[in-house]
Each structure stands twice: as structure tokens, then as C-alpha cells.
Amino acid sequence: MFIELTDHLRCPEAHPEAFLVLIPGAMQGRHVVDGVLGCPVCQAEYPIRAGLVEFGRVEPPPAVPGPTPPEAAGLLAFLGLEGPGGYVALVGEAAREAGSLGALLPGVHLALVNPPAGTVPSTCASVLHAPRFPLKQRSLRGAVVSAPWALAPGWNDAAADAVLPGLRAAGEGEPPVVPGFELLGTAGGWWVGRR
Ligand SMILES: [Zn+2]
Image (tube, rainbow, N blue to C red):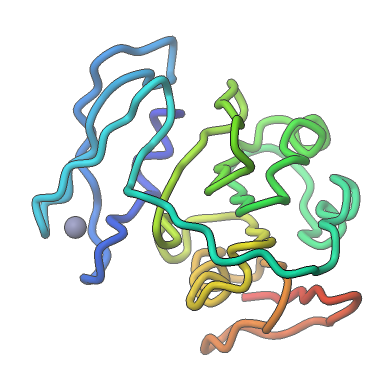
């Protein structure tokens, strides 16, 4: 896990969001290979093992036939981003495009949340396993929620909440209903909106 991502993580327990405290063990440059994230509110501790952040057991919702996530260029068009800096979250199947999207967005760090099995972290992408969206409100330059998590309650809303004002989130299924989030369009089972 990229160490600076710590500032944008939240405890997945259902309490008001608070910062997490990182106790790093093994590091590789600016990446935490082993360590612990602690929550000062509920005292939960979450391990980082082999670079993977483990916020808890993740049981994906049942898969139903849906649209295939767009390729990286399509995701980039959804998000309307250019220039380096900041963080973009890819939830679920869309994380397959992380390598290509990372190449299109140099200097942007990707947070891959519950990506397909076998996804490993890289210098430009952290991998997080979480029972609910693990990033804070107003912490991201963009977010994409795809199957199967887009169909789970709360994920689309949380992603919309997590983008910075003026920036975009996109996903499958029901568009978020979040104050201040403006739906820009829907097509092919996907929605795109702006905070
Ligand atoms: Zn907590």
C-alpha cells in the first residue's frame, strides 16, 4: 500500500469517519508491505499483508449479467481527468483496467478496492479488500464502481461522496442519490456524475 494513501482511508465500521493510524512494519520505498492500520474510534486493527490492505472478510454480492466495464480510455472519458496527482478508486471488475488506466494517468495513484482475485499491488496501484467503501469523503479525484459491488447497497453512494467537489464518479446500476451530486448522464447500464 502506498503510504500516503493512509490519509484518505476510513474505518469500514459504521461510525463517523475518522483518520486511521498506520504502524508500518516492512516497507519497500514508499510502499507498506506489512503493517497495521488502527482505528482510534472503535479500536479495530486491520492488517496489511504482502502489500494488501485487509479491512475484513469480503463476500461479493451474487453476480448478475451486466454490462462489461469500459476499457481504460472509456473509464478516463467517464472521469474527465488529466494531469498528475491525487487518487482514483476502481471498485470491482473495473480494476482489471488498472495497468492501462495508470499508463494514461501518470502520477495518479489508483486504489483498487475488491479487485478480481489475484490482483496484486504495484507502484501505481494499492489493493484494498473491504466490506464497505474504505475511502473518506472528498478524498478522490475520481471513482468507478463496477460489478459486483455496484449492485451492493451503499457502494455507489459512498463513491459519489468520496470524490472532491467538481470531480466525477461513475458506476453501474442505480445512480447515487447524494446531496450535491449531479447526474451527468446514463448509457449502457452506466451512470456518470459530478460532485
Ligand atoms: Zn473504527
